[in-house]
Each structure stands twice: as structure tokens, then as C-alpha cells.
Image (cartoon, rainbow, N blue to C red):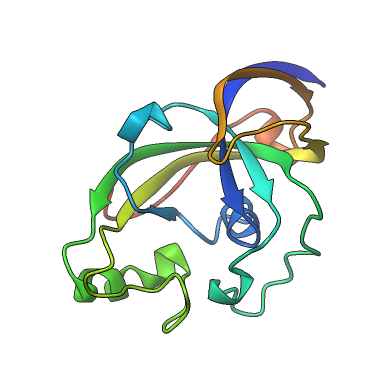
Length: 168
């Protein structure tokens, strides 16, 4: 069944987008807290806009087949976040590595003095049956709501996936 959705959207680079949809990644990392400049807010369902890879080598995919990267941005599902937490130090960052999937030593890895890193805890995610092509989006996604018609895949058609993260 197709549903009409009116949501804002957030860009998430491939393969991190696919790790989220595969429910392998439950933490998105940003340089700012959730709610910063109203880009994304706690418990706000947003379109997950999958963008072509720029930092693909930074993702720890653990031999998971995620399919080919997109050539252009596309909406692949929806995502919401429960909260964000600032990483206090390298030890906290390393302890969370299985949640954020950023490879040690990669371009996106922790670097002292390089600015803040925040863990956005994924609360819910729903995958679309088919990606929806994106005709226009900003550097961060859709800052104002867009209307899309989509079909959800599998059980996501009826239920929202809630991350079982033990530290939320």
C-alpha cells in the first residue's frame, strides 16, 4: 500500500545509510548536537536521503553486502533519533565504534582538537520498497517538509523499528 508522507529530510551518505536500514548501525555521528539549527530534532520522523559516497572507505561494513552505491541522491526510507550525546573523549568514541561503524584511522575517525563529535541515537527506521529519486535537496537534506508517495518494505509497512540500543 502506498502512503503519502510529508516530512523533512536528512542526508546520510552511503554506505552509512544502508547500515542504518540494515539495522546494523544505531548511531549517526555529526559535528553538532541533535536540534542544532533545527536540522533534526528528537523523535522527528524524517526522510532518510541517501547520498553518493564521499567517505566510503571510512565505513566499517564488516563484509555486509549493501548493494551498489547510488549515483545520485535518493530517499530510501525514514529515520528518527531519540537523543544526542557528545563524545567526551577518544575512549568513549572507541567504545561506541560498533554503534557508529567508523573505521579506525579513517578520514571520519576521532581526531584530537578537530571539533566536537555527537552521537545521534537512532530510534526508528523504516525502509522503502523502492528508492524515490531526489530532484532537489540542500547540503543537509530537506529543511522544509516535502511530500512523497512511498511503499514501505516488509514488516516496516506496519510497524516502526525501534532500536534495541542498551544505553538509550
